[in-house]
Image 1 (tube, rainbow, N blue to C red):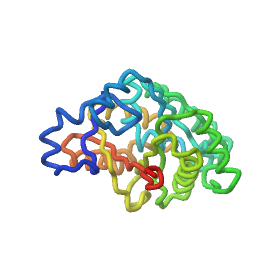
Image 2 (cartoon, rainbow, N blue to C red):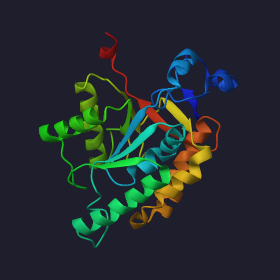
Image 3 (cartoon, one colour):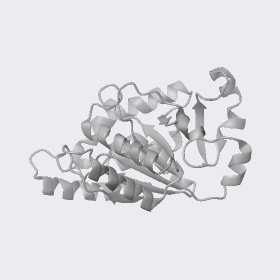
Length: 260
């Protein structure tokens, strides 16, 4: 069960939505985060879905969407944490090879905590590329995995690796015929994600501690101060928006062409 608290595309006020929360917002995941109609839910509740969460670095999927990943895994869906890089430039004083070896193990430990599978791609931390070869690499991976939902970085991001990751996934979504639902997540909004406007909020209160346990597997990143300064306040803020203790926010990518 996953609680989607608020969807801005619903034609109702926030107060009206909250009054009807029991009827509208507790449901089984359809194809990822949003839950549409009760009829559609009934049809899809029996189906196992695959969700890819594609982050630029080790710890990005966990910090940006770890609570939602835990909820999805608990609901019986297949969740895959995809890392564009191995965090090669992420440990001061370590070579790229040394840092990558450490951060791969940390990522494996985090995925074990969440109960999800992991995939490492071939780009390099701090030197990600957006070109024809990299577009193809991302498209091939997504086509091979054949997900129902992909969650990735909001492309307007002050971190170049995040922005590159978001653009590569968006291109794959378009070239694969928009055959999966695409959601963007936020990373340290204000300093990294810019002008992020969510469409969906997920109540992660029940799995917040599990999410943090997965994040803390990334010991080389000094994660506890990052949680305290950035991620926990974001979870609390998103929770305040929809009256729960902690939430994660996402933006659904819609395309007018998809409706023609």
